[in-house]
Length: 602
Image (cartoon, rainbow, N blue to C red):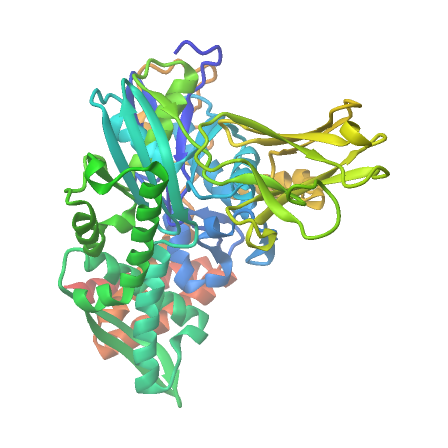
């Protein structure tokens, strides 16, 4: 590397459902394993003993202890909400920071060097607040966020970093919680994103919910019991439907079975329903239609026709749904490209961007674009003041980044003392249809005639920082607003508290097992080698118990009546023993459950 800082810049795909971390070393992009797998579920929890758990362990806990577990936090990024987890509450950036820190720690262990720099990806249609909330999460995780880049853009790098042809590419990115489509032009080693569209509230989660609601409605019609009203039953059903969705990618029919999922009049109720692929595709067709509408809009923005598209790249786990591929084949007349695992492409592309920042030789130049129009509120044709304000665009969607644009406005009256600059993001001239990003005041000095001229400048950097500057031309008085964090003042004051709380949680985390360092990358020369064997305690038993509970619940769903009853009774006892930290009873119950599972699976 030629960069003065020898530490690697990792690439992180911070996903709604799963997250991935990757790095480029010796010119090769590589995904780094987390807990022995290439992807880590984006799930965070606090186990009954008060310890922080993440990834698969936290996901296994969700069915048994949903009130202690947080999923799909990405959909709440940029919102000023508090998310309960156990007896505590956390902001969305704090939960995301826990995921990022766990990925960072695993990367450091795998590479054998400290890791504190990252490129993090976001959906192309994330707004400025969502982007800066992601940046804040990275900072809370102890990372210097070198760049925030769009997910489809990152995927384009993964597929075409060494591409010599001049082609137009559509990147269709359908993930767990969001959808994006970007159109990129590859020409002479330059990758230029020329348009992006998307929906930050559309993803695989919605497909799961559609199937879950279908099954729950049928169960309610038959038994007059709504499974969605019981938290534990709802999560069991949602997990079963998510599994069925994956199976329907390769099978024509699946049976969703859950024994003892509910109770009525003191009698247990069992769920067993068969769903065909045709039935499932009917349920989700409306969602796929919405993605195709975004594709059509992106093509119009790029001023391209379908026959001008040379390649179609699929990214995100939801693209494995057969209906997605069939609709896209019908739309483009092209066979989709799957040369890179759709779950890993975004992280690999982020790692390639990180390598560019490090100074590694990468045969590509990346040009991204603004995905939203930015402007201010003004009296159209008049200036600032009271009355019927409209949205006046200054920096338009599709502008290549970095971008800088300015426009002139005028004070409303000669005695006006202050111009209020309200910054918005959106595509509509009616302000109520757009999103306000912030505001600031510009003091005016004798705003008569040309002295009332105000120049407003928008600057949007490659890393997503927006700076708005307003200057009174005659006096030179200037004020600016930098939208480089999504925190309110009260949240900013709580930054130190957020760091302390996250640090306290990580004090409870079990050390990463030494065997996870087995993929140490050749070529890294660590300044401070991490001793993988240092302070490695015995694995926390609660993680194993939570995994066993999750497995027992799944096995009970397809077991006979007597075995299912026995398993559910043992599960209840084990939950109580875990809560009470009764180690002897836990060991005995674990053995009993394992024996029953072994018998059922024979």
